[in-house]
Image (cartoon, rainbow, N blue to C red):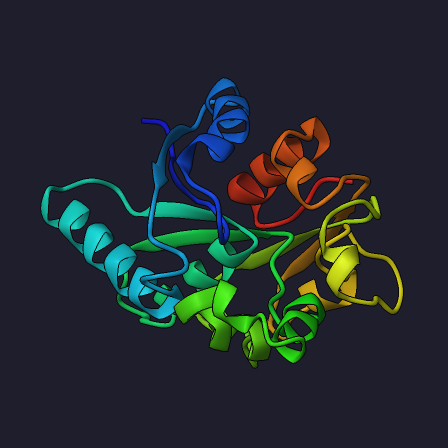
Length: 207
């Protein structure tokens, strides 16, 4: 039976942006599904609760535990849900997720535009302190410095145009990988998809 993967989008996005990555993972032998949520009006914490509820319902239907792959805010939603040690989750990959907080988000907030992040503002501004200790979590960072985030934030060191590489390095990760891709480009990158597949299979990024 193929391993299940649930993919989550980031803020201001929806399920279709995940389709290219989902297609590559299906070609690699995984069973995929996408999880949509109201990233602004609902917020990350509410989305995490909804995700947890879905996974528990899946377990009651005797579905196997799922891997989680979250892009940007979706990675934070995945880790918030996975803080519950009993949640039926396997490995987690965060793609371009500002796990320690987003400098671009803080710049937006500082200009009085924080309302655009809605109820996800808190987690985007502050990030998390540590990956769930009972989970295997890996993070992929983009290093192609192109994206709208450059308009709102300044970056120290390499970044993907929206999220700095250092913002993707959360204590407790079991592995970290860099890809020459922009923030949204991570979702269509062959190299990123191969790295995701490797981590879901082995708990480590190949290469």
